[in-house]
Image (cartoon, rainbow, N blue to C red):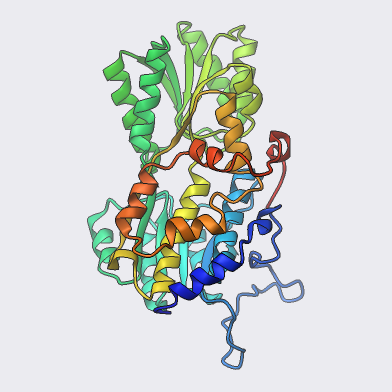
Length: 412
């Protein structure tokens, strides 16, 4: 695939494929692997030698998670859009859960589906070594998204491989610290936390930033509840917070693996007659629009899933189109989480990041990510300075939808 970037650039200039982003059921992308009705066997058979050569320049594999999320829909649609715009194909395989075995199974499915690169989120380091081995054996590029490596043995295993593309993560520590600083500036001195299991490195970094900010800015963290599994658990936790620590001014959600936080916290504060208690979050939470409009949210940091997939796809596409990794080495992208302070910030996210518009149009792909002389350092600077609000401003004249179109709908 060497020396074809000029051909791809010409192709991009001719075919600006903005229209394929309308809706999530794009005909250009491969659907998640399904189960055969008669045999019950999976349909991910290895291609036979007699098959005709595929038309796409490359195939990038992604996990497909079954969940009611407009954000995940937009994430997948952007990946499909970029691959198609570059003359490639996005291939999706079903990932049953975030368990280590299911993550590895998904990678195995994608390799069987003849992909050239895989964008995968391992959650923890547990599946990393096995995934690295699978990709090395198959000659498939791979990049971690939202997670990086801390175990030195796994780091050595990955970085010694010519197929390791690196990782794209968010600056979780700084986002948490910046939120604490803003809370202090708004007069917040007493908070409680709803957080996640600290075995997840993202959760650990967020809590480290939160506690460092609390110490530096004079904020007292009275209590925390880890790893809620249901709305009832969240409601009971908040009720307990307010009963034991009536001085609590704000509930800070430092991570959300379920979609029940906003309604549960709102219910608990209303039942306690404490509508004065604010919320803040290190994810742009589902169903947060009404609460934000009503002023219940002080600050939110997030919006990372769509840009992370976009940047990972760009890294993989460069390797596949150039015949070598960008900068001839693995790349570490550290992206800024976007802060949303008010309803306008949130609507910009809904309309321009998880709406029916591409995060970067085909024309922008050519002029930003695939221009002559583009380097790994250029990409790192773009990632560090990424902003949802900047994307909203760049596309403000493009036709947009309303928030109602993106909330509480099942896309997967």
